Amino acid sequence: MGTLLHFKSLYQEAFDDCRPSYLVLFLKAYSVFCAVLLAMAVYAFLYRVFTGFEF
Image (tube, rainbow, N blue to C red; front, side, top):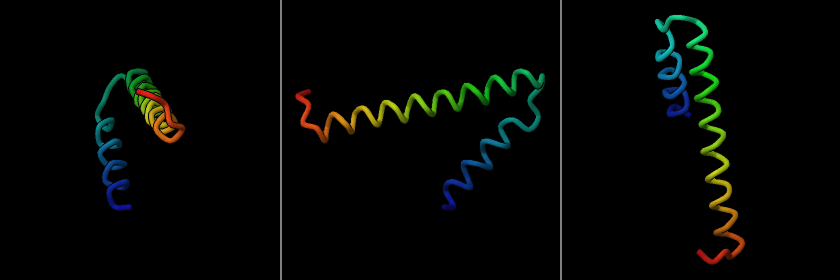
């Protein structure tokens, strides 16, 4: 749990003094988009591993 709080504080500190505000919104949306894509890639890999896909 401490690791997640550490990552949360790093994420918030990264955007503290960032200007202009539309750039902050774009970067936050992009980081969420990248996290979703990474989660989908991990899911697809694990799905193939557990269903016996021939690599």
